[in-house]
Image (cartoon, rainbow, N blue to C red; front, side):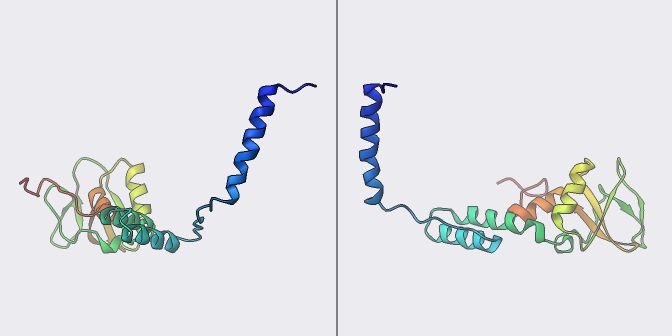
Length: 156
């Protein structure tokens, strides 16, 4: 088998380039073994101004999303456009469709998934038979990305 002269020249050129791999120092590799390593890495990127503080905060919130318990963010009061309750704080009616219930100790990612799977935007937060409050998709997203403006916020 006869080798093409162009191939021989190309191979010679490449072999000469490989010499530089010993002169040029490769970058250190970053090994990440846990979420805390990622969080520390993100903090360092923010400190070095590679990431903005808002971006770092968002990434860290996303890392903690599966750890947040519902009881930290549900609403403890009711609005007239949501579930209707009586003076004993018992659910007597609701608007439009079946309601989803969640326990105060459930993790946000599970409640978020439950709401998505049921095409629902709010859930009743319960402890046993007692109603503690409500949680909406917006509340869950606020826990992840920070306060989002809604119809109650005035546009300036």
